Length: 94
Image 1: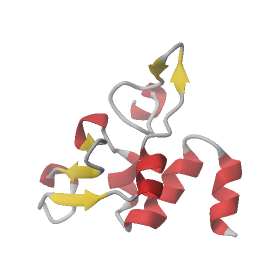
Image 2: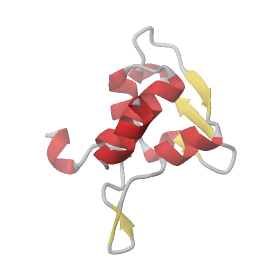
Image 3: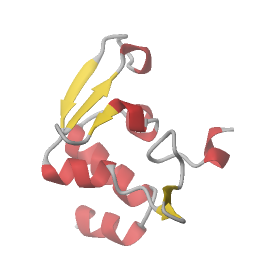
Image 4: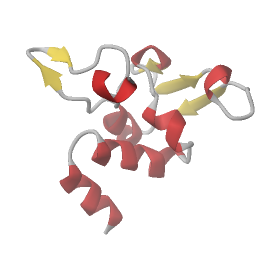
């Protein structure tokens, strides 16, 4: 039921909530996910220590579902809606 509900939400909340469920990472870590932290070909998220509660870096291996959720940022005229982060729009970052 939860998964189906997230599919109806759309970006950014649907993919964000799915990635929270799939990774078990903190909300702030997922919401602040940067494209530069993703190694999409190798399906790895390299979360730097400066963004974690304990200050230690994490390597999060991404399954097909995780990878799909983390790369579902919409395109605007052939470009990512936000070239820096996956889920936050520039307005959300102010």
